[in-house]
Image (tube, rainbow, N blue to C red):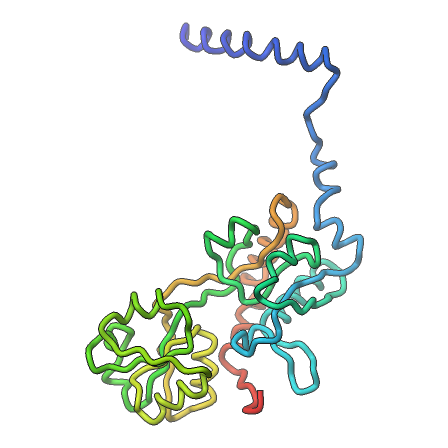
Length: 280
């Protein structure tokens, strides 16, 4: 009891001069919640009547998250998710096409409100932007020949001498870490790499989960996707730092669409049922 009295007395002695100084200088450092909320991007979006979302729609590797169809319309998993969020806000949606290399600087500069573009969370990116709770769990997966289903069960079965792994990844850290014993062959396009698997000149093709699913759907009977990723790459929505209100709203929106089945429906539509035309 005595120790508590001494501590509180010490705190009071420290705080009193600060309070007196504050009164003397007639300063008020407190900021009301209403003032903070008025500066939030959430309020700006609602007042503007438009949600602006940055996406890279030019690179086919981002299918089926975002892409252009034959009519030039932007479609995909992320587009549908962004539309759901705009509808929940009661505003219109505007997609702002942005090259991947400049998408974070463009967000920071205020060119749009959110990044919804198949972006995986990383500690490095998190230095520049805030991330929502993940809306999709991605990672590297394997595509194998259907004739090898009893021979290859996961990535460990490919990490052996005389096994050939094909990829278009430039990320040496991934392939070197998981396949140090295998022969790694890189191709310019996914289609070339997949053809090696179909013809059984290669034992497996490594790509992001969504891309592996697409090629398994495009080549039924000859290929099989091993659907459990062997890397962990949660995808989330990026936004500018310092905006707690928008982050809170986005997180709650994701939880709601997860809980009511809309997110699962998007995953079924784009990750399980969508097969892009061969010309895309």
